[in-house]
Amino acid sequence: MYIFYLVAIAVVAIDQWTKWLVVKNMELGERIVLVDPTFALLSHRNRGAAWGMLEGQMWLFTIVTIVVVIGILYYFHKEAKGKPYFQLSLMVLLGGTLGNFIDRVFRGEVVDFADVLIPVINYEFPIFNVADAALTIGVIMLIIVMYFEEKAEKAAKRKGE
Image (cartoon, rainbow, N blue to C red):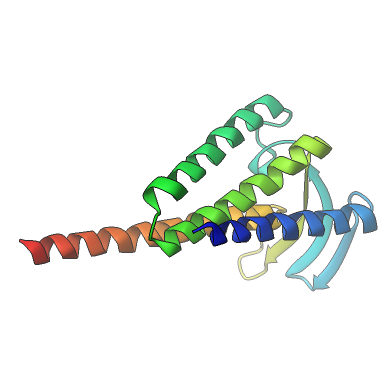
C-alpha cells in the first residue's frame, strides 16, 4: 500500500526538477519552440490558481491545499484500501498538489513552462507545469476508476438479487 507513495514522490521530484531547470536556464518570459507551432517552453510565473485566478491569495491556497492533502490521505487509507487504481490516482493527485504547494511556499509563486497550441482549432492552452498535468491526469483517473467501481457494484448487486 505504501509503495504508492513513491508515485507521489516521483511526481513531486519530476515537477520540482523541471521547474528548477526552467528557473536556472531561462529568463522570465523567454520562449523556446520545441515543436513548431504546437509546443514550446515558456518561462512564466503564476501567483494565483489555475489560469491566474485569485492572484495573491496565498492564505487561501494554503488552507485549500491542507484540506485537499488531508482529504486525499483520508481516502487513500480508508476508502482506497485494496483498490490499486484508486490508490494510484490519489497519489498522482497528491504529487500534483504538493508540487505546486512547494512552489507557493518557497517561491511565493508557481513556475509554469509548458506552452501548448492546438493549431486545428487555434487554441492556446493556458501555460502549465508537471504538477498541473498530474492534477489533471489524477482527476481523469479518479473519474474513470469511480465509473468502473460503480458499474461493478451495480453488477454485483444485480447478481446478488
